Amino acid sequence: MQSYDVAENGLRGLNAALQAQSAETNQTHWEVQNPKGSHAIAVGLDAPIEVTVKGSTGYYCAGMNQRATIKVEGSVGPGVAENMMSGTVVVEGDASQYAGATGHGGLLVIKGNASSRCGISMKGIDIVVHGNIGHMSAFMAQAGNLVVCGDAGDALGDSLYEARLFVRGSVKSLGADCIEKEMRPEHVELLKDLLARAGSDANPEEFKRYGSARQLYNFDVDNAAAY
Image (cartoon, rainbow, N blue to C red; front, side, top):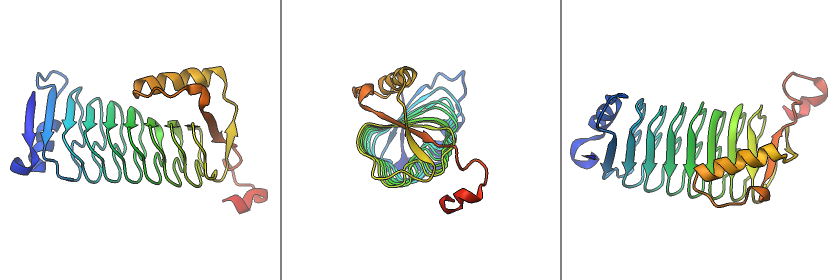
């Protein structure tokens, strides 16, 4: 295992070392010591390596990830896994605002709670939150799955497109053009797989599904008040 101390050697050197790895590397396991809330830890990775961050991080941890598996043994600041393409990011604690924003693929798991705008403009990423999420989550979400094992705040799924939202607890309010939809057998199977991959023992039968009413795809004067 490769060990890197951010306090001693600096953040720039860490990201340079991680970004230099390739699919053929034999340095497949990394441990990051003393992150001390630093921003942009383990960003832009493009190799099937495993990185464990021993502590909490600041902004944009694991942003633009491809293929890597990144685990944070703490909480994260805004924008974790922002614009993620593939791979897996696991946060053992809580996540601040816009977790998984604009994510195109991969799996983001948050073992605690997520703040506002979780999954904003998601484009194919799968996000599983073991706790609760804040307001305006999945705003303009285009594709992918957002799974919430707890409760959701105000304006869930406002102006969303074809992303699927699954919530086990209560939803404070739904955003524009977001409605509850039928939970069919194929959705239960999809949810069962996502929960298993995220290490959750929640029962998929207890969730409700939400999605787009498809009324805002094209402008209609009768819907003007909803824009």
